[in-house]
Amino acid sequence: MILIVDDIPENIYSLKKVLQLNNFEVDTALSGEEALKKILKSTYFLIILDVQMPGMDGFEVADAISGSNKTKNIPIIFLSAANTDKRFITKGYASGAVDYITKPVDVDILLLKVKTFYKLYENTVELTQTQASLREEIEFRKLAENKKDEFISMASHELKTPLTSVKGYVHLIKKTVSKYEDTTINGYLTRTGLQLEKLNNLVTDLLDISKIETGKIEFNKHLFDFDKMIDEAIELVQHTQNFKIVKNGLTEINFHGDETRIEQVLINYLTNAIKYSPDSNEVHVNVSLKTENAVYVSVKDFGIGIPTEFQPKIFEKFYRVEASSARFQGLGIGLFICAEIIKRHDGSYGVISEFGKGSEFYFTLPIVN
Ligand code: ADP
Image 1 (cartoon, rainbow, N blue to C red):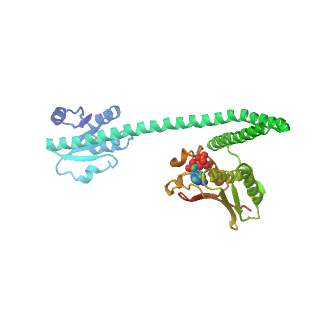
Image 2: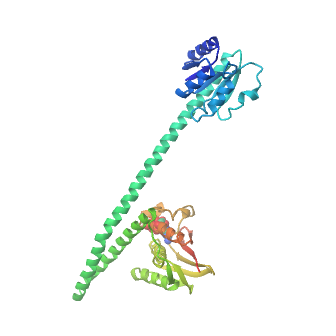
Image 3: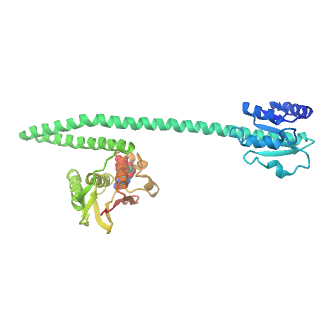
């Protein structure tokens, strides 16, 4: 709706008729004071405001409008005498759109201006609606995300208990059966144990994810022999995989950090290196003191490699390189957890890789005195 403010009823009458003939809804006020009351109650997309009125003049009305959040963006067309200086017209009304028309009013020009303001108003309404629906969508998605995180957390907790007892029972059966030296049954039990270990690692990773999400991941930092930790991680992986793991370098330091978590990073790098190298059977682990202040560990494989454009994304949660995701099992959370562990030790991580030739995953950790 348009509000026309003029103290002369005849002026109002003719303007009102023209606008109504052009399908605009019109409201009127005969003084600045009446106009302000109406503006607070109703919604106008445009105010046509006479400058010279007894009592409050047009500028004072505009000043008052610009002072309120609800009204400050309503555009104003001032109706002024031909000799009014433009500087006065824009004075005090910086935030809203302002225009002016000299008297006697040229109806065609007025209509042109009114239509432009109406178009602007329509665009603003549309933008506001789009903004509101986008906000709604974001809220909804967050709520989806939250439910998913809650589910992962609940499911992994629930899975962990029966899994631990199944592992215990398989261990007992294996111990009992081993007496009979039945190689078939022993073989089956060994394979069951390996599959259970994989399942256990998956559930543990899921639990870690929910701990990271909820900020509950805890780090138990203490001094430990860094080279021994590296050797133990290699031994553990070597134990289950038929792969040659070549280690180069030593740090010869005691490191202050969470030994189990740092070992977890190395094991993850190693198992990935093996998993993503279907046509190779060798992995290199390089360990060194990068400077006096940091240790450097890398795991180099000769596997499928990662195309350059995907390399920055692989440490993100649930990210898997699509081209190879069907060929290799996984959830895309291992590297995300590694990144979190390294970050929490103020270290850095990354990958150097050539598609089709292999990858070298590395991390550095600052040595804290
Ligand atoms: P997952 O292996 O379960 O998918 P990760 O978080 O460990 O999850 O790895 C994320 C993705 O990074 C993998 O899906 C794979 O595309 C890529 N990737 C990780 N390690 C290697 C590697 N050594 N060689 C090639 N691609 C790798």
